[in-house]
Length: 192
Image (cartoon, rainbow, N blue to C red; front, side):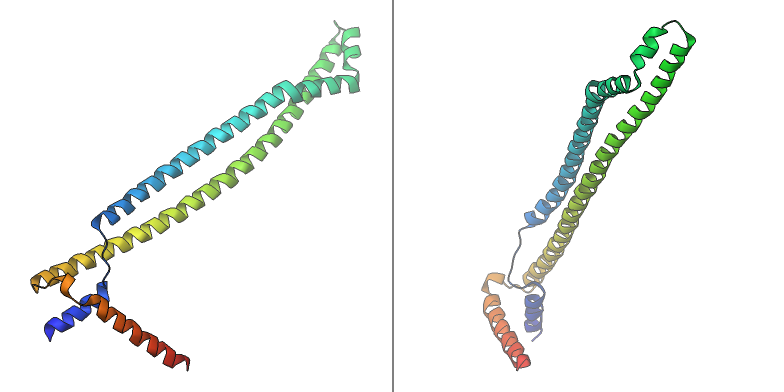
C-alpha cells in the first residue's frame, strides 16, 4: 500500500515527462545571451544617436548657418552698413550685435534639432529596455520552472531507485490517460 501511495504521489508531482539536465543549462545560457544582446542593442543605439548628432553638426555648419548668415545679411543690408564705415566704431558694434544675435539663433536651432534626437533616443532606449526586460523575466521564469522540474525529476528517480523500481516499467501513461478521462467526465457533469 505504501508503495502505491508513493507511486501515485510521483505521478501527480512529475507526470510522465522528462527533461534533460542540459535544458536548464541552456536556459541559463539563453539568459546570458539576452543580457549580451541588450548591451549590444543599446551600444548600437548609442552609435546611431552619435551619428545623428554628427549629422546635425554637419547640417548646421554646412547648410543652416550659411543660409542664416546670407538671409540675415540680405534682410538687414548688413553688407552696406559694415563696408561703408569699415573703420568706424559703429560698424564694429553692428558686427558685434549681429554675431551675438546669430550665436543665439544658431544655439536655439541646434537645441531644437538635438531635442528631437534626444526624444528619439529616450523612446527607443525605453522600448529596448522594456523588450529585453520582458525577455529576461520570461527566461527567468522558464529557468526557474526547469530547475524545479529537474529537482522533482531527481527526487522521483531517487525514490524509485530506493524502491528498486524502474520508471519504464510503471504504467504512467495508462494511469495518466485514465485520470484525464475521469477529469473530463467530472467537467462534463459540472457543465450539465
